[in-house]
Length: 353
Ligand code: SF4
Ligand code: SF4
Image (cartoon, rainbow, N blue to C red; front, side, top):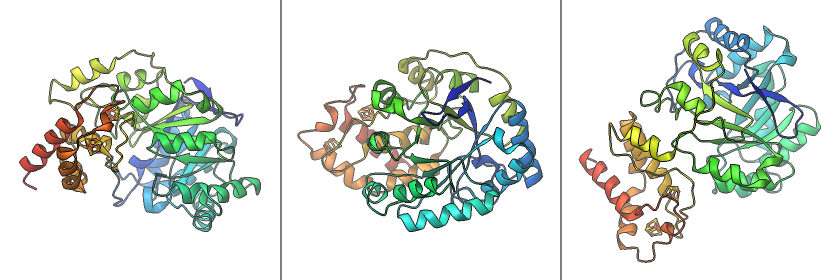
């Protein structure tokens, strides 16, 4: 296992980390597959990763990751606490709420989290999170009180991560990307301000959907050239722990065209890399629809169609009649965005909704 610096924290983290969604039990409406191991098995899977050199474990509160947080707490009791780094998170945006959640997480884990993230920050809640009495201010207080080690902002949005990178109260960022959805990673790599923060990468396997068209070695090797601190891999079984952590994968160079060509063997992918440069002045979040189109064809039909339906009719009608089409101005993939929107509309209609 190779190790990397976690921003300016002084921590060294394993290049690949353990994402705990697949070990949760029960029903939590999250995207990836989970395996519902009992606590004893889940602890043993985490121990296997640890024995391979993994020292970074990422979880979230019970409403988001079920009993994974408590299982992680049980695992940590079995090893030297100083040899593992615990990353936790909660989807609360007000200071009082997240303060309460951190105290509860400490109880569930039986130890203080090394990092605590405000989870899923987006444009609709960012002002609250970053503002006075917001979640970030509370995390900063909790850090000064010694209840958490470091503060973090987790988001799928480049604009939010950029704002967090400029904020001196934030130690670590968490964002998503993989060899297909690499646009945000390219922007983070090229923007100097991100070098001051630790960066945790998630969705390397695209919630498991890219496994099949690609081998884990290709998905992992293909992102190693990016300047992240730790890339999380969802692990739910002993076999997955071996695949993720037992060997050091060599970095691989995959062009975006090679990736879409490989996907094109089974469907016609929408060649969007999710760079999020296509800002629509009317508020349509088209890159999210583009992602769901690809996810539909990669095996998440029901989930993707339900997501696509939400507000899509409005986007479709607006794009059809849009004249200025400013969203296309900065698209590095030169996509004809209204035409791609039409393709999504045909998919939704073919599905009978
Ligand atoms: S075509 Fe017009 S309405 Fe549609 S996303 Fe682009 S700018 Fe927005
Ligand atoms: S449509 Fe173009 S600009 Fe928008 S996220 Fe995709 S690649 Fe980037």
